[in-house]
Image (cartoon, rainbow, N blue to C red; front, side):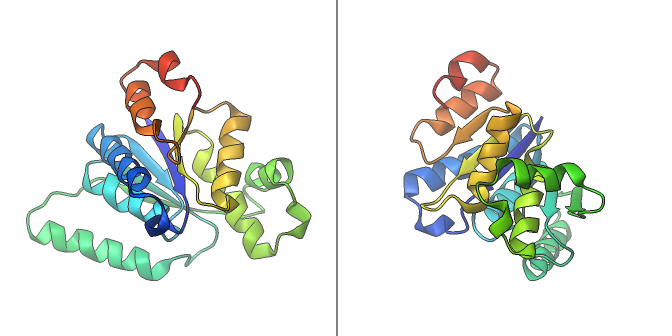
Length: 194
């Protein structure tokens, strides 16, 4: 399965119950050998990338431009190389997708369709919001940990809702239970009031 993992950059400021559940969801994604798709932003995205990959997931990083979060990415790759030297097998693919407005017309259109004020976005903000479509589109489910201000996470959540993709909001206390039930095949019961 392909699971989109999105969330606040202020991961450490969220209630511990929510962050612990989000981390448990990333572990489940890894243990099930799913594909984790995330945006590589500081906070929730980087936690999801690291944790799901370490637990067995394939990883797809969707970036708004070339070089986005390069220092983190290089350190992440270095740590994987060190784990390989320690005989910890981490041989699953890591794929990077980069938003290109001339190529990803549907990503661009998603901002105009689902963002509340697309004309007010700077080019960089527009690219960040457009890449959310690349993260969410094609996912079997979306796990989101929104912060106090929704920002890009809110855009990803609106896209998921607009595309009819199951959305698990980890700012709700029951999100992990519902995600686990959904992943185990109890689809209808787990989606009630996500």
